[in-house]
Length: 93
Image (cartoon, rainbow, N blue to C red):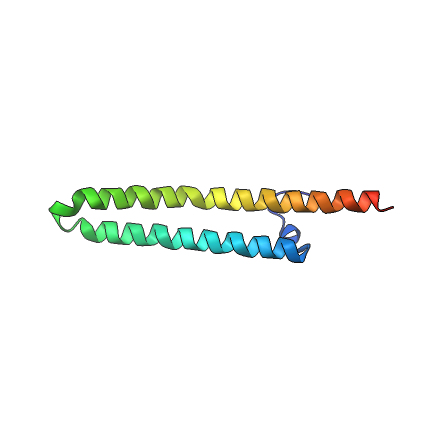
């Protein structure tokens, strides 16, 4: 099995559940990043909120870094599940 293959996500009920959970986490992080950048952008209109705006940009950037990490961890987890099932099939014979 290879990473980022659609069939890895559909193999079993467990793989579909894991895929859905990671997609939910990905979407939450995506919204958090967008919200942090939007609020940070608005805060830049007032000089006294510049420090808070900068921190929101740092938080948003961190969220954007988490997104590919979540996807990679999800794919590795799905790959591990698939490999386990392949091994079980080999020894059932």
